[in-house]
Image (cartoon, rainbow, N blue to C red; front, side, top):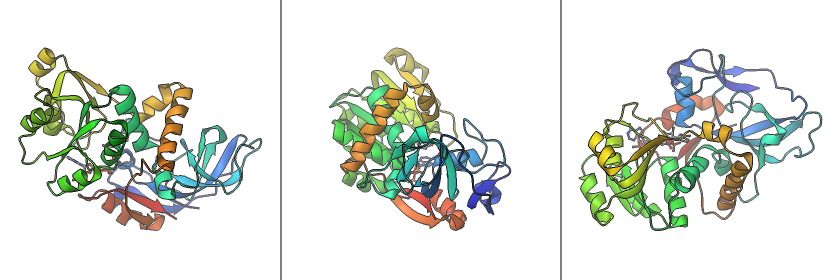
Length: 327
Ligand SMILES: NC(=O)c1ccc[n+]([C@@H]2O[C@H](COP(=O)([O-])OP(=O)(O)OC[C@H]3O[C@@H](n4cnc5c(N)ncnc54)[C@H](OP(=O)(O)O)[C@@H]3O)[C@@H](O)[C@H]2O)c1
């Protein structure tokens, strides 16, 4: 089978290669999937660079998530049928390969009305957006949320979820050209970090109070700016490190406004959360995809063999959705 592989950590264009690997054979309780669609997520590329929270043993296949068809059943598996469209909640190795093995107990069937492209990006961004807003910040209808990197795939899902749940969003982007695009998507306020008096504008939009919660993925001065927009007692969730810069937090603000900063990592949540709760969140999100309320945007598709072009596109500024590897 064709697969992307890396033998050492480093820049993706230097260390990733297209290789032929033996077809995996499902053991008891396992399913072999013919993967057809996988997104290129920032965490995939950070893993290849060797700077993510959990690193694989080398050689390794990149890719956290994807979608495919059931191709072969291991002994004792009767819960899925050959040819069925499936999202694996984790595979052995990575998803940037034609085939992968997954435990039969960790498969999510894809309803007909959900496209392959949406199914392939079901796990990382929708779940993270939902858990941060609904559980971690426990936002209520009418509450104000501020997010950084708002033009990201996750940021666009946050805008969709917020509209559905009645939260109001202030969206920070680094490029002014993105402002109108995110207003058109339904963001209540969209500000460019490059040339706005962000804190004053946030105060004005929120009746002088500041926002109830922040979700922050950039770091550095953008993270500090977002933190300054919190109202007393507010919470900022750090869930990304796009700039790799530390956030210079203002001690006085944290102290006198009683602010909280905490991290959120999907890997940890999936491992530590009650499995019934995980199932409930996944089912709710799948329901929103079926009804068309939650649609992850797609920027482009490339065959596995064009992985270099695909990765370059995924790292280019100014995309309006996810780059997907097919084939
Ligand atoms: N903690 C978790 O469990 C978890 C789960 C899922 C995702 N995430 C994180 O969520 C973030 C978004 O993921 P995604 O898949 O939605 O990303 P994506 O679609 O690839 O978009 C990345 C976005 O980040 C912006 N960006 C990149 N570097 C930046 C910088 N230095 N300053 C400001 N903006 C910057 C880009 O802006 P331009 O449009 O200007 O290029 C783009 O809008 C990532 O950090 C990812 O790791 C975390």
